Image (tube, rainbow, N blue to C red; front, side, top):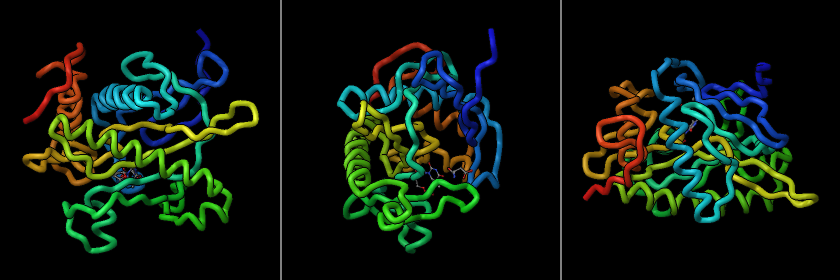
Length: 254
Ligand code: TMP
Ligand code: ASP
């Protein structure tokens, strides 16, 4: 079989040309990076877990009518996705102060925010993904005002849905990042969710103990990242208790 054409390689994923026009294969690597790749490690099994968790979440989002690029999982590390034109923004939604917001504004981590806060970062590793405002986004033509309005409403719907999904399994959705892309239906453009939604791109805290179940475990050297991600997968019903593979229902945590 001919080798697939590589379309793009990022820090945690690789995109290959898909089997049909308008599709890509998204491959999840085991590589973990933080602080703009200053910190790096290979974490056995991370890619497999993120592939499954992102599949689970994107499928659930499709089920409530939130458009996204996921088509189907192909194998342990790969999923078929719809090709879209990525909008070069990281869209962060926060429910609880943590991470860069706590640092920048001096608000204790764990402080509940009075309303969800949305932030935009311009995707450019050379610049370290700087925070930008809607003014920058429109002025520099990264997206039009109407696109921004659509992105905000998409991000807030995702936030409401995921907050409930995670709370049902005893996890607080502190914040998360999504990326979006454009697809074209003839002359009409639609904005859809792209990239991944996984513990790499969310902050997830156990409701009772506050234990971190996300990439902060790696960023802050708090223990085993695969144990944390496996726990998320187990609670979502993707892994059976104490094992790999198989299907169980979501694990309700009382
Ligand atoms: P921050 O507090 O470091 O700004 O991160 C906010 C959220 O965005 C957190 O859930 C982690 C996620 N995130 C990414 O997915 N990619 C990134 O490059 C950064 C900086 C954060
Ligand atoms: N910024 C990403 C993170 O910390 C990864 C990286 O910057 O290398 O999640």
